[in-house]
Image 1: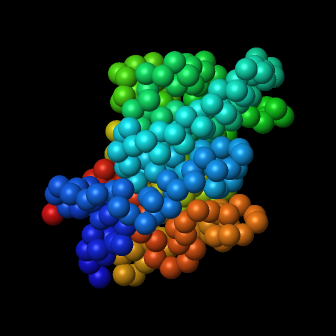
Image 2: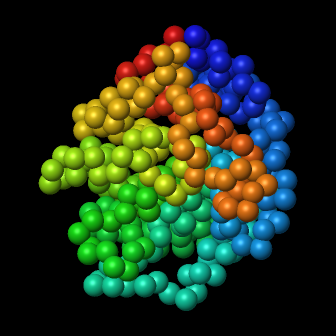
Length: 305
C-alpha cells in the first residue's frame, strides 16, 4: 500500500502535516490545534493533582503535545508546562542523592520537562536553565543518567538517558548552549557503543522488549526511540546504528506499516496507568510508522520522492 499516503490521510492534522513535510518534502500546511488528539491532550491538562501522574498528568501530556508540534506559546500547553515545571523544581529543593560519587537522579523526568519547555518557547526561564545545568552536572562517566541507588556505577540506565539526551538537545536548539549539546552527544555515544541494544561483553540482546517499539514511549527505552533521538542529534548514519536499523526494517509489516507494540498505557477511563487518548493498542500504528520512516530517511535507507 501507499504508506505515506495513509499517513497523509490521517484523521489527525499533526500526523498529516509531519508526514507531508518529513516524508514528501512538502509544506506542512495543517492546523495542528484542530486535531482531536491535540484537543484532548490540552483539555484539563492541569486537572491531576500531580503533574507526573501516569499517564494523564501534565508531564506526559506536554511531551505528546510537542511531538505533535503544538506551536510554541500555545496558552494551554504553556500552562501545563508551567504546572509540570513547578513540580519538578520543587523536587530539586530537597537536593539530589549521591551514592559512590554519582548522582542518582531520574534523568527522564528533567529531560522530558526540559525538552517540552524548550519546544514551547520557555527556554529562557531560569528554572528551565536550572534543569539543563543539573542534567549536565549529573551525567555519569559513561554518558547516561541513573536513579537506581543500588546500581554499581558501571553503567547508567538507558531508560533514564534517552529523554535526558532529547531534552538537552532541544535546549541547545533553543539557546545555542553548546554544553547541553555536548552532553546529549555523549549520551548518543553511549547508545552507539552498545549498538543500541547489545551487551558490550557478549553482544547479546540486553532486553528483548527494547526491540518492540511502542508509542508513546513515556520514559521507556526502545530502539525506535533511540534511533529518533540519534537522528535528531545527526547520528543516524553512524555505522553502529545499523543493527537497530536492520531490526526496525525487519519488524515492518508486509503492507509497509509498523504495528503498535504492547502499550505502556492502560485503556481510557481505566484505573491503572490510563491515557487521555488512544494511541492504538493493536494493528498498524500511525506514530510508530511515521517515526520509523523518519528514522530510515535520516539514516539514508529511504529517499524523499
